[in-house]
Image 1 (spheres, helix red, strand yellow):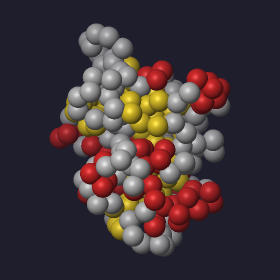
Image 2 (cartoon, helix red, strand yellow):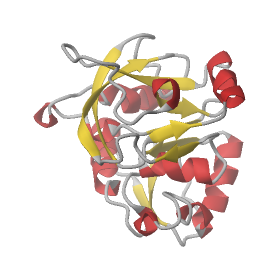
Image 3 (cartoon, one colour):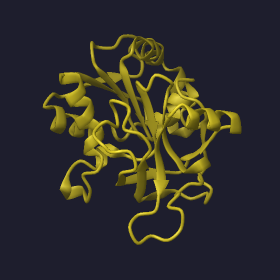
Image 4 (tube, rainbow, N blue to C red):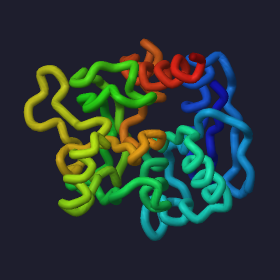
Length: 229
């Protein structure tokens, strides 16, 4: 699987994404600067976490208009797989590649910890390595991860199977497990064709036992296996 990781001013997880993809695919991703106007020939584009443009205006709002985003939109329309993680998810919603928006956490505080996730569907190349209903432990690190959309959009996401991941309690944890107040505990969503996935948790930081969890590995592994077939 050939991949590229896009870098914006303020990105801080691009190296983590490169390390995870290199470990699992055996191929080092290309780094693409946000001012570039062309993408390499790849199977997967990753828009990583961080604080693009210092989160000015709104998280992801300025990055959504970077020169590379036009080519990313065209690639996604052709069926290239696109993964937005944390700030990357925010950028994809601001760019109109995914519906909804990410608001301030309901607690108005930065949240940085492992959270529980329930896999809502295995019917995508991103989630084929998991079973529907499988519970995962993956870290989050964000201040603006509160997913919001109007009721009609939320209903449409549910009906079309576009909810990828939902927050749930970790084993022994009390409460809902929702760390940011996201509508219907949504942690990640697909576009209609499921070649675009945005999620707030960081699967690239859950691929090595030394990091405390390998539950994020399945996301990358299923892509590698599907694209090698």
